[in-house]
Image (cartoon, rainbow, N blue to C red; front, side, top):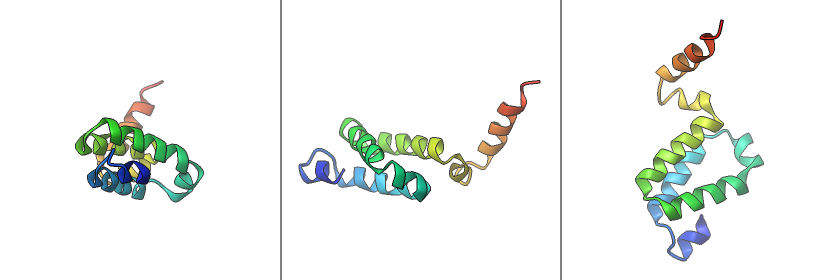
Length: 88
């Protein structure tokens, strides 16, 4: 993402969105997939405006660390539990 910023392909707002997103993902996951995450965030930053990138970043963090996203949406844990409890 830094290289894309340097050549003007993305803006500082995109970098801020990506940095915030990475704080929501556990370090153990980021360390093991740093290149893939950077590539994904860079591709999205080049294709979408910062607001849409923020939505995509929230989705990424919810997929990689659903327990962390529960703090942002307390009802999420209940919905996940209900979805799992439907089978009988």
